[in-house]
Length: 287
Length: 287
Image (cartoon, rainbow over all chains, first blue to last red; front, side, top):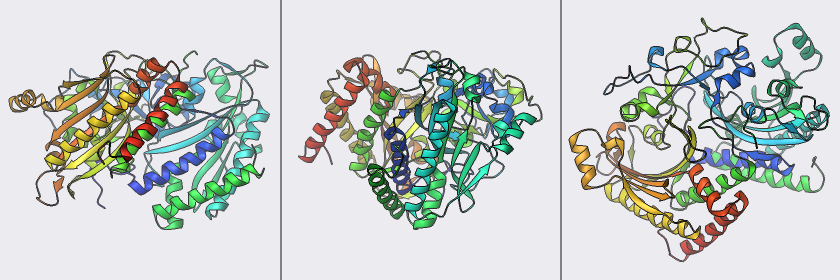
């Protein structure tokens, strides 16, 4: 199948088979969230530059950042084929495209006092400018399903333990050979104190199939709680947060490689969902 | 509920109740597409400026256009709170945010010879810069479900007739008072010939509840077929296209007004889906 004008480096159209698989897989992951009490939410597709800046996004990932402008209509030439718009033809950029789905969750809860044990699940389209792109493995725009925990330090740790069990069980059920690795997170790279903490206690673990990280578990401690003024309603202290994140196109990539067709991969995910659901009901996984 | 930093004019977070309703409604609309043979697809979330320009987007909707840039890293200041990025801090904008979900469908099919009767259904996040925003009624970023027909003129007309029946039946089942109105489409506003054609034969009809257009049926004749070099495999002529389009947040807005809660509205959509499905099976609607 030839790629049309809509497809290019970093941008891919998903066929009917890939679309059905993505939706089936996402339903399973969302169900993990809602089944354990997470509120399913849909977050704004753009976020204010000012809000993302408050989360250090433009300090930590300036090379990956994508921002959004309207056109300066006083300079706009109609009737011309535009290959690009030069900076001088743009208005100031007030909005950014999110690079992770959970940023909007912290920003939405700004200034709130939450009960311990709050969880939210979101599917976001995320955007990262990269030096090179690689099929479904590395995209400019991709889907990220996240299940986010907000509460006490203990709760956010327990959240990740539960998701590590689920991710491991799903990979087993799907016949994927997966390994877990500690990774570095740029949110904690800056400054000696944070870098030291990270070496002592990793804040990000990735689950890797064929050198591709398809899921991650992330500890943010009270970073987002402090930046967004989110507190625990019991103590008034800044909430801790953690999240389990799944790059859906990467799952599609490894599932296609494993099963050889979208249809066979979808069938495997459906069987895994049934098997894991049965294990869940007999106490085989955290409720 | 107070709005956090993620929410602002034109950008809204959907609560759990609204999220469940949006997904339920979208499943019904997607099912109309797939049930009559449409391929469900997921299109790239950004499109090249050059591709959108070829569709006259920047001539017809320059005031609504939103384009995407990376940062000029030679000028980037770390450790600063950014409220916006000035044009001089941006690289040229190579990508645009789509203002309609179907553009990517035509661009994806560029240069292909298609069988008559091709249909595709997509859910896209669409973006339009507006003078003012209004809750879920007028957003900077919103969800659009489309069912797109590509083929002969006759087929694209029949597609719209079938969807007019479905839209009317759904509004009836949901107890929504809806009217149909001819509307103008900027794709045909330019030039005497197109404007004349449009007066003789409207190319856009909107379905309106409480002064809000919640769905539209659009005739494009061979405009996108010609621009994208999409041909009919039988004749080699430029394909005609048409689409049925649904602004999902607008449906949420009218359903909430009608039913008073997200839960009651979701229940009404579920009942309508069952009733319309039964009518469909007994031949009450086009297959």
